[in-house]
Length: 368
Image (cartoon, rainbow, N blue to C red):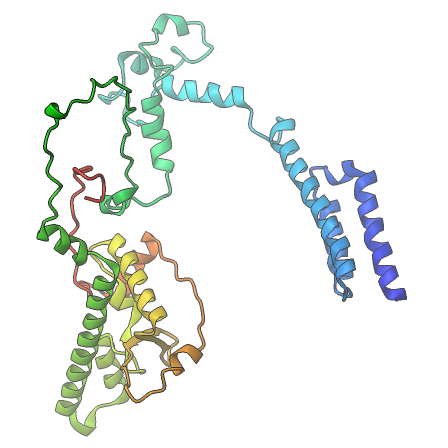
């Protein structure tokens, strides 16, 4: 009990310090906040009851509030440490006036006033002959700023258009209320219901998740069987003289791992499309979650997958009792290109799917 009282007293004193001297925690140097967090971390190690934990949580809330106020003060309250809006706008205007971003002074993208302004001591912002050069709309040429300053700084990869799909925005027209004429039975028009064609059903069944996952599962079985048959045939031709290095190189050539499965990376990577590589990773992860595909690691620590053979005599409760482990696998375009070069992938193991062209909404909206 004495130890609990000492811990509570220490935590309350630390919080009292933050309440009475907030200016010390709002300084540019975060030493006070770091010292508080370190001291709180030392005290919380001896906490065994929820009452002390609740007191410590209140202290963390106070520290988070002071940290947020400190960041706000640094970015907006103090111009020296934040962004000077006037200076930023002035530099943007200078960038557009002089047509920066284009190295060639005689480029066709430059206007006549921008070429004259690029001359030494002519037409610079704030110079005496600035008014003599003219403007021609260069001061507010936001298209030039976006093309030569903003677009080169975009870090997101250029994804193919088919990934947009139903995320496209359908413009909704505002319905205007019109006064209808009085209801008359003689003026009724016969309207036939919309016919659902067999082609529409086949198109929807072709691209749904279960159908694609089933095709990938069948493709995995075929790839594993073909790779194992090719390796066994090559080893039979070599006979007993085959060295372990040769067997290893032969298995690697057919994307076969020591576990007997197919190399996961070489199976999902599509060298023709980054978007379909991401989709293949999603489909394979779905098969692994459903228990149709098993994930294992070989002697080198590389992941391999193989289809799970269903055993009719196995206990039905075994799949429910299996342990599940969650993991996140991320990939970007740079990693995608490095994998293609490292494994020398020329053709995808999962057949390349034909990308459909987006033609806008149909008669029934974007899903028609």
